[in-house]
Image (cartoon, rainbow, N blue to C red; front, side, top):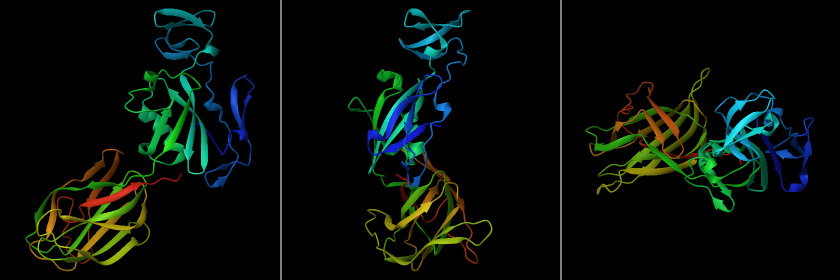
Length: 336
């Protein structure tokens, strides 16, 4: 694991040497990591073991810059080709990865982290490394290097980054996102009174709202229930709202009404059911058609999978292919 230091200033840490003469980070024992008091240790696997074998053709970092291994010599040194020049280096002067430092600004804390990166790491991979220990989504991360925001970089090598470079990292507030599970709209020939769909999501999110289809000619009311499925007990009710008013849309300007809810945490791969019960409707009720079983939010790669859902003692007018419950609104769950 990469080492992480959380501190409010630079006086809480210092660099010391291990038994091999390599620099490692030492910190005070009373620093806080997130909401827990804990001692922060530097794991040995953060330090690159220079005794490992370097295969021919492998891209490595040297004091002269990036090069490729040409041969291992009888003396134990390696011949590295840097541009058009071949140079011999002892194994202790060769590295397989960058070791960079990040100063991550989050609310009232500053996170210091040493991160190991492959030479061909993309900017997205770099953001994922950072997000893995500060519990936010990579899309919220802004990386600044030499005063410039890094954008549209294929890989870090293009920046001319060397070992021990320092990056400034800022965290953006979460942005509300949405997914649409139906592609078209029509008016129903009958009143779709009882409607339910079940789904999973591949990452923890906070549900912020739902879409309700309007009626073309009359105002309608919905009851809304959200359940979490449980293996050993009955489904757990996590939201209940009754008589949600949805105004008619006789001019067909926007067939979906956005209803905000109190934030609900949805857990990765848990199974949820959304039930929308319609109080009054007619043959002018909008419904969705050409439904999708899998919907991915294109900017964050958060994926929703939808399944048919049974309603005890009732006919469900909604399934994966068509029906109600067209839109889900959410933002990525973060703990920073």
